Image 1 (tube, rainbow, N blue to C red):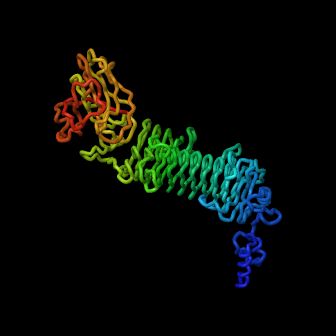
Image 2: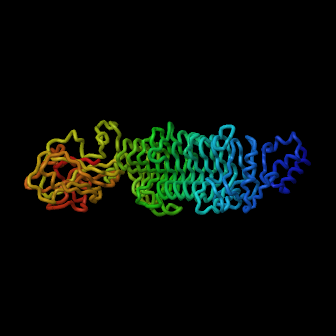
Image 3: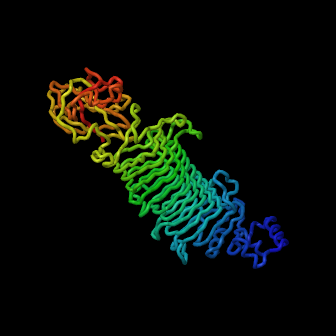
Length: 598
């Protein structure tokens, strides 16, 4: 192209011929037209015969919809800079692109492309429908929405979505699109008799202040890249049936519920689960990831950073990753959980847990830093497998002075934790194989019982391997007692500081033989705990015990540290379990009473 012709083209564009590429094409010879991207198949909605105004007050619905209906597959309907008022949904036919001028970021709404008017009626500002509903001659696929901002701030009190797809709508592309203040959902998909939307590609989709869910990404084989939800009235993201879908660098902040919610109860994840890579959350009111998914397709979180979720309550059981009633395997690698109330990480308000697992089949975590208020990894009970790698760091406390829970290795003298060894890795039986959390000794080594002294508090140590809720305490009597003193027989549980966590009256047990299971409810941190026995009867019962050849042998090498004694007494002439004991006041005892917790 000659220099003079380039000048003519530059002048035409600079003079503002409403951005019409068709106008540019008339200035260029046919041989040059192919070099100007997008000339063929472009329809400018402000040109005749459509004549959209883009002034923000005129209803441009008919003009834009006419242009979309007339556009041939592969063509582009172009909205030059302006604000286009609409009163009804715009439906994009198969293989047609609706493109704006830029697409503002959610924080700067200076040049909205589409602004539905106050009298708007319909399901969504942009609507994608299946072949039968749209009356199309071919399958509904390959619609593209590019560089468009949808500003729904006029639609107070309605139930309009920003973008909605109904039925079998395949291979849609959404690029550089913002949805602001949608009364219902920012983007949502729904099944009908034709099927379900699937295999979409979305890049830089931004949703702010949606009244419902920010993005409903419930479809298979989709790719979501750099998509963001801020301030959703429900979940930031809702994801179900997302087999083989990938979420890359996606984000959720300030949602009223979970940041990412994966599948409601009974909602399967299909033959292959979704993968989340480098995704982030911040200050969602409930959990960062709330997972309740059935099926066998694994759900993987890799390299995600989750901050300050659970903002609704620091003690409400919320977690950066909360897995509840999930049969799908959940695999977490390279997760970073960071609590706080301020942008600098100050305060110590949420989340309560880094990862919390309850009633689920298989959850594993490796190479991660879990910093939360109560515990890094919380086992809520009822799980089949909760696997924690040795390279997982757990912290509690404020970010300025975190307290690290030493896991995998119990550092002598600090009670920092212990290793929950799966199966027979250590060459010994394991409580997990019996559906238990911890025991004072292998029950295979329990022999006959032993009667202690009335009103004396006996302690037997056990080591809790992970943060967990204990719901039962197991113990037993070999030889029944006679005439128990009413209201003076108890079993209970203390932590390493001496605080009482559970107390159960067992008057009725004294005159019978075990084993017994008592119901308790105690939130346990990793490390040393003691089962407590306080009994009083005319003839004392003989409680299950292990070997007790010698009291010193039972606490070998611990003489200088009474707070670490495995078997001890701590008080006499007691009629009830004290609210607290002083571990440094423990005294060596030759009573290796047996108990377990589950």
